[in-house]
Image (spheres, rainbow, N blue to C red):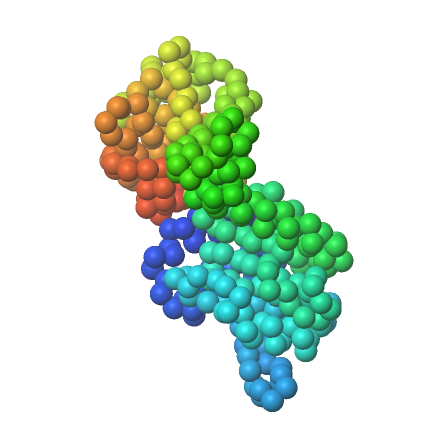
Length: 367
């Protein structure tokens, strides 16, 4: 798998297993060590590259330990402090990172609970860790535009100077984006007044502000939805330019009601929800196979997700055409489908292991 695929696989693992992990050690073993090894590319079992329980004397404090130190070309470059998955991350949790940062050569410090990673450096004062991170990776809402910056910290592409040079811009852009996100969810009075003044010609009294506050929140939510839908529609046009009848030679009889392509063809409309469901299934399956092998094929009554674009290799079905309920179809070893109700697309992650097991069956050699 390439870098982005490895990230996607770890994101899926964290989302599906986080509720089972209750301790810091559990988070280290399940999430953080895989992040260090599969994403950053360092050998967690080689003390020349990764030093667990890294110890350095800090002033009067002797024998304090940091959870991991990553060594590149013989020099400690990255310090990592770990917390439980249930812990929220704040600068108060980073006291050891602050102390170690000042007495080692490390220029990068990471505070993480396994699903969120906060990266710090010393922009404000030399050899003193900043109080605010320059990079935040949240696996619940992954910003893929940050992945090229993360790649600079991998073993094969380690480029400390480049990431330090970009850190200030990343820091302020990230803070602005998070501020905008908070304002869109819960508009502050200044934000309400700023927008109201551009659309309302009268005096902005307290009554007017009270009236416009929910309108600003509603307009912000609709604006974000419009932007997301626009991008998805663009992706739909470029990825699925037309839904055509598959050639019968490629199909043949399939499992339970999936033959030839009897439902595919005219009258089929691939919805944004189906695209979203397909992308989730693809992200789950990419821990087992290359992403390009997981293909979406829409039909009138359901949207099929297949391996190798082969009807004989159904991975799942999305039954999203009903007005009342939506279902995810999962196949057993005999290719018999069982439908599971979905309250939201996120519920697909509850069936991640069943999806992976289905994909694994198709990768096993025939007896």
